[in-house]
Image (cartoon, rainbow, N blue to C red; front, side, top):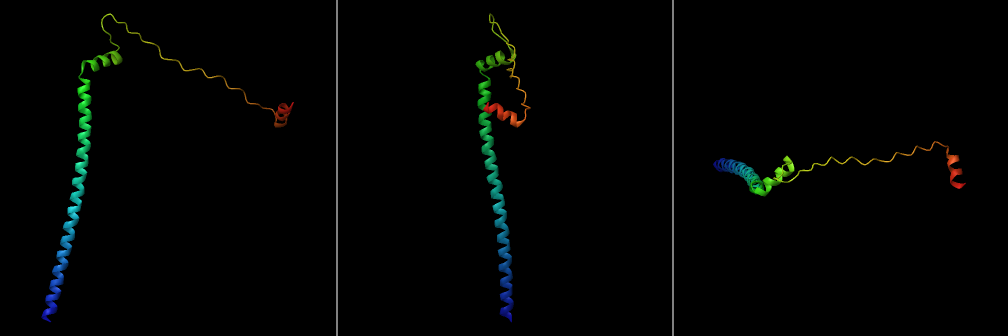
Length: 113
């Protein structure tokens, strides 16, 4: 009888330890996936930061500033003339031919004769 009680007690301890281990393992897996997502987002943010840094450096050059002033503000250097052309009008499409309202037998006669 005493051995049965000890056996059940050991079984209960083993079950508690197993459930505790499984729960800890699942928490570790969840935290690992959160950490992997954070590293992925960090990589994306670094790439975006690199692109924006390059664009900022490019936009601060005198050539870029001059190009933007010429294109967007229609500015020019002294002695230059700015020519603004009118927008291109759309191409006129030909008028459609009216539909043929003759009967089919009249059309066939027209094909053969």
